[in-house]
Amino acid sequence: MVFAWIMTIKTALKNQLQQRFAHRVRFDEPMSGHTSFRVGGPSDAWVAVTDESELMSLMPLLRDNGVPFLVLGGGSNLLVKDGGFRGVVISMAGRLTEISQIGIEKISAMAGAKLNSLCRYAIDKGLAGMNFAIGIPGTVGGGIRMNAGTALGAMGSVLEIIRVILPDGKNLQLKGSALLFDYRRLSFPDAVPASINDCVIIEGQFSLFPGCRESLTAEADTLLKNRRAAQPTHLPSAGCFFKNPENGEPAGKLIDLAGLKGLRVGDAEISPMHGNYIVNRGIASAADILSLMEIVRETVFKKFNVILEPEVQIVGI
Ligand SMILES: Cc1cc2nc3c(=O)[nH]c(=O)nc-3n(C[C@H](O)[C@H](O)[C@H](O)COP(=O)(O)OP(=O)(O)OC[C@H]3O[C@@H](n4cnc5c(N)ncnc54)[C@H](O)[C@@H]3O)c2cc1C
Image (cartoon, rainbow, N blue to C red; front, side, top):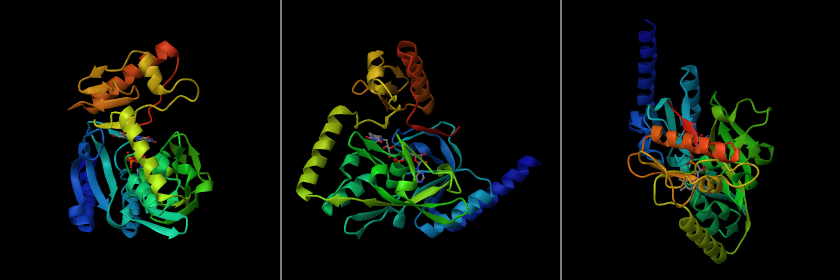
């Protein structure tokens, strides 16, 4: 009886999604096609929203039906488990990928824009301040959510304004200076009526400063060259798997010192090139990657008494 009730709700919601999004909704969509790890089971539904108003009506629809959602950027920091995601995965397309200059030293980027496109756009406009992010895959929204960055800077340092859609579909604008940016993490202050986990970031406005286009281009080229030389960017991965511990050696160095480089579980491998990269050598499953993750955590803890925390967001069942 209960099962039948759940199925009815599910079918009704499916129909509504189909009506609203037509070919932009897919059911039982394999997430392996949407993540840089190339792993992940099916999500109940995957929807590509193309403008703000669609998102403003989708959010209360999901909330009222008690359906969980996962915002998908470029999928470059996500490990979706093999059983997939029970709920709706929201991707951004169309107008939600636009980038524009909105002031002499200010750029707006919608959350679905590629972070690298934002970096290149800034260079093209002769604006400096975004090069720290050159080569980081994924979207502006994912970058803000993860406070993505490198030794040269992080998203929180250039973000002036953020716009989010709340669970009730309302639009909220917040100053970057009011947000709580931490190492690979963003949270909202208590005054905001929802957690970041329940919201969708739709736009970031970035405050930059004048620079020379030629030297910014040269700097970007050098940074990309260095990245390619030090990281296995040619293989599927989610970048650095673990956060660097607050004190002491970085995670990659600890993994290297523990002798774990090259270790494999199935097709999941600790990259021989960079200890903090788990790469997919072919047909790794999420379970392979998670087993390897546990071996690394146990070994590093036993040898160095350090608990490594994943930087990669692990979702699904
Ligand atoms: C080869 C490689 C190199 C990398 N190098 C770096 C690096 O140098 N520095 C670094 O910081 N990271 C790096 N990463 C990790 C990753 O690229 C970043 O964390 C990136 O910012 C994630 O963006 P994304 O759009 O792919 O997010 P996703 O992986 O799609 O999502 C990550 C998280 O953000 C949430 N999210 C995404 N979009 C939104 C939104 N619009 N609103 C609300 N929540 C959202 C998701 O739900 C999820 O929780 C690397 C990854 C790879 C594969």
